[in-house]
Image 1 (cartoon, rainbow, N blue to C red):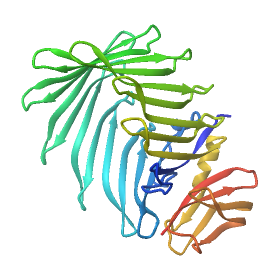
Image 2 (image 1 turned 90 degrees about the horizontal axis):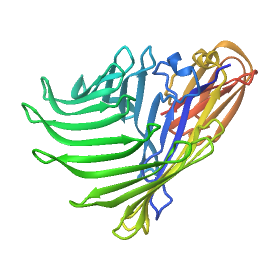
Image 3 (image 1 turned 180 degrees about the vertical axis):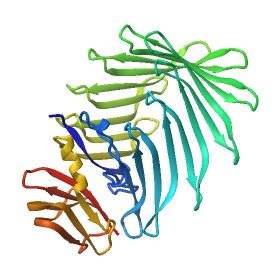
Length: 399
């Protein structure tokens, strides 16, 4: 039986400074949303699909987290994201803010994305990207345009070339002068015998000729994972060290550690570090990073993220989510959970975003009323475990 990841993914992110353990920015939570469709093409293997993202901001007056914004993704019949809407939380209501709209060709290649802002009445164009692909589905052109109030106007573009193996060999960036395209930069790439990119040499346009600027050199381990990089700058006569990175992987080739360093003229000093852990299914569990100051002697800031996911054992099981209705949701005093089928000895757990269990209820019947009680404003999860030990997760929002 094929397995698919249940579309519930919670991430908790706490930003911190080295001198303080207090969360000072936001908690980030990604959870299932009733607003989107679930294409079956995403259910063929263990896959994480983000339906919506809720963001909180730390309120220094109430010393608590406040809902700030959310992003909702909509999917088409082929499993492609067709739009992504951002809403802001204003006076306990969700208000449209920004929107991305996407189109695809018959091969599911992205052909355009349009960014719009909400003016209170209608969506207003801001900018768009138009993409072109060759017969091998390699992207050959990115064209960026801005909206001047009545028409789309060229801004800049990237043109790409490929070798016979489909490896990108060059990227030429150009800007629009108002009448013609003008060279700006280019990157040229080389590869090893197994199509791993070895070098990337960047050049800038000097009116009539290309001049060297940056060079990246990549290294790989025996499993083909990138084990490091070296970045150098051209000083006019020779290449000089600028930065380097070292990567470590676990036995399943999951990236567990990244250490970036900068060159101070005589030695390498730390600049960035990231560490991750994974479960037996290779789903990420934790991720944390740290940034150092320019001398590499002190940590300036960092971030830690914890991921919670759940795996279902069949497509039919995942779709049983739709047999559970929660209304109203959000709610301020109480909400009702209604099942389409009679429940017998079904366990219902209510948990907060940290996974702490608020209450447990044993239900026999088709309906359950949940009182707000002492639950504070925010997002909670309802976990339903039926007599067959099948699990369904839903979110509720207390206002």
